[in-house]
Image (cartoon, rainbow, N blue to C red; front, side, top):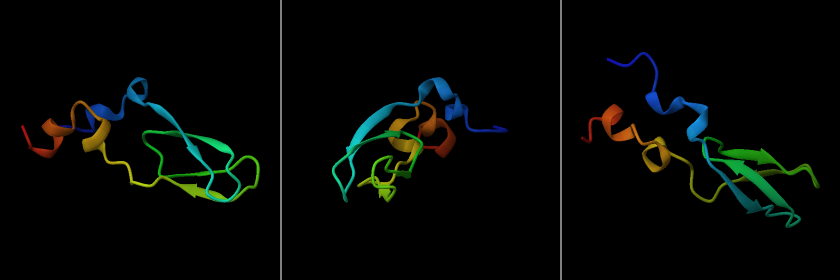
Length: 67
């Protein structure tokens, strides 16, 4: 039994750059974030696809029972 997800180790988080939908400014998103505020126009930006631990976590299969 897990007391917390083994994928919560902050060393496994990845960064990606997404263009702000309002002003085009490059916003840095991390793999565990759903939204971020644009530093230039202050509007909220959302990822196209909501992140899921199944997409980025090596232990997700173990936690979800897939393996």
